[in-house]
Image (cartoon, rainbow, N blue to C red):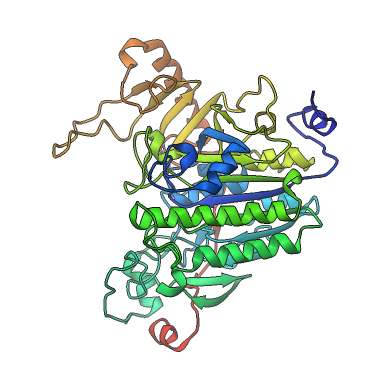
Length: 498
């Protein structure tokens, strides 16, 4: 029998009223592979807390992000395909002139309209200028590095893993000179032109991130997340906890370094699992588990260091291994325990799902995501809000999926045998993901009618987001004049970057 509260939830998939709006926690890991955690098949990394989370919740086995960081995060924040709200060729970098437009409505802003307290703790990566930071995008509080942990200096360890020898050369060029070397690229400073990593709190740089601090990031973020949960336990809250782990460079904490069977990556995955356990334990201790929905996910597929099996491909591609990410939903008493769904879900469904669960109004502009609450709550016959799903890599539409059929329009072909050059790929390629999740067998020659149908659907995107260039449905980037690096003003850094 459906409980009275759940009966209200099932009345509508557009706006769902609840007696007690749930709290929301989204834990977003960086570059976590599909099979890097126990619930999705890892035999190398010990993840007891995630194992328990999956046993008490639901695995979303067909959850899509984007090939790389910034686009994925823009989808999560706005409920849109990344290209609609962040039309850039790749990712954002330090001191970029562009970012997520403050005019966009984020999930944090949607929830604030309903009285939620909001906090972002961790990696933002949607722009590092004041106009783009979390506190300008609906979050009451922010603590973290505003981009990837490899976007700092080699001398402080941002270009090498824990334990590798650091170069003994201080930065010598000024920030202005380094920026000038980037030409007209608005997305920011790259490579050795990048300033030291900043740890930012509510818009202010509070410290740099040398190796020792880098190794403490998971602990720092976890402690701040627990503090927020404790402080806001008596009213609805939204906590967004996007870790820099397990992105290169790998810096597991001292208590986890050398403890796994899988090197630095395994060490850091196991520390992430510890962090998840700390968050869930706090929710249980405060007796909030029956009114808190927790989503665990990754911003894109794992790199070649990770295990994405049985998927093919890695981060940066539109193959399943580049975009399908390990995701778990946990809400005891509401999300049925020990279940999984193969329905297509995505980062852009987070905003409309959270809005539906507390009766919040959706943004008054177009979004692409849909309400997943019927799926998450175990409603019989619940289906994905996506009849068609589009796989973008930067500006290019590289693949399209309808049901189990995936048409790869362009991109990576079959890898060659070890030590041999990969054969030149011929496109389009058609895969039946129901029986071939690893995209090993191109069946386009046997299903010409499916290829034709999906090609027409792909071509229809030209009038919206565009298939190769910025289309008419893409909205404007946020843009500032004269962007400046975020600098921690201690003596050494000030002298190098003044």
